[in-house]
Length: 197
Length: 313
Image 1 (tube, each protein chain N blue to C red):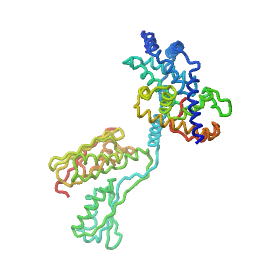
Image 2 (cartoon, rainbow over the protein chains, first blue to last red; image 1 turned 120 degrees about the horizontal axis):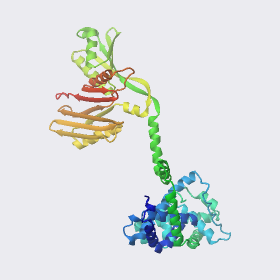
Image 3 (tube, helix red, strand yellow; image 1 turned 45 degrees about the vertical axis):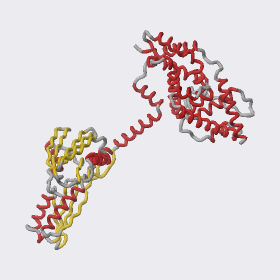
Image 4 (cartoon, each protein chain N blue to C red; image 1 turned 90 degrees about the horizontal axis):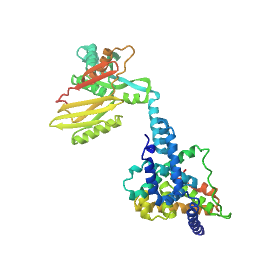
């Protein structure tokens, strides 16, 4: 009998949803902000929720559900980031088209701005991207980010500093290229870490 | 500077835009529950992937692991590729002896002595100059160091009898085709460790390093000295074959000398078990070992002892 179809399946699902309730929206937002599109973010969250359900028996202390769930979420995110390596080699026909970043001078709506930042975030190493999203976008404190990522506060500070610096570089190149994203992309050196899927 | 400030402003503004934009149409917990049930249902009805699918998923999610796996496969592939290489089948000792009349018994007696002292398979005698004899001895040993030692000892013996002689040692090679790992195994591993002034652990470590350099990895090496008695033991797995070398010495030189491998145990066409056993015994005997060899089909067991002369320097 598989884990998901056993007699306690329904009870476990209710338990997960009850635990997820208080953090549901913030975790969903984090997932969306880590990805290039909302659809990818929703997919990431769904995969993390499913994995959390299948591993719920591993959760020993319900008071520590939030860091536990974020560990699952970030683990799925990192796996997906690694998978994107193969996508670069073999582009999938069903990969969603990337949203075009807005150009200054054109009408800059929030969607275009968000897409531009998502593109810049995608070029960061995965750990720096997570630190920037959790701290700068989601508004978690340094201690909370450390707890959610399973790292120390100094490590988070370091990732934030390096991530901010790379984001600033990216935006300065964007300004210097007069807002042409194609030029920014051509000027940006190849990164060791790969963008997420 | 303006670019920098402008970039900072744009970044701050974009951060706010991302915050705002991602809140649009955020699915509620009810939708999460619905999607979770659907995912569970799909998962339960989905046919589980076979080993190949599991491997493919692992490889897709771990590109570094995949690269390492590919590297290992490539290395293994390279090791299995047949190549042509030079294989040492023995050593040839050429002895130049000044004047045949000086040797007791003449040239014939000298040739017989040379054959015995050098453990030679064959001897050729040539009168190259009126006052010089040349003996060409074919030795079955593949180690040049061993051949040189035998030749040197024989030359020294002749010198003590007031016979002037010089020796040259050259390897006899044949061009053969085999796999890379076969070539690696074919090479003789010579261990030479000066034990004086070193602890037992240091000697063992040095033996291990020399084995590693010779391609024998993960060997279990022990070296112990009690008074003037020294015992060395090596256990390793070489290409699926258990190799065990044990050496016990009392007194003797402080330099430890062990030659591992280099035994040609290939069965020539039509060779019986006894013939192969004799072939191996000949090679071990030529190294000054007292061997016990059992050959039964593909199973070859070699035990060899070396009687050390405690007075030898």
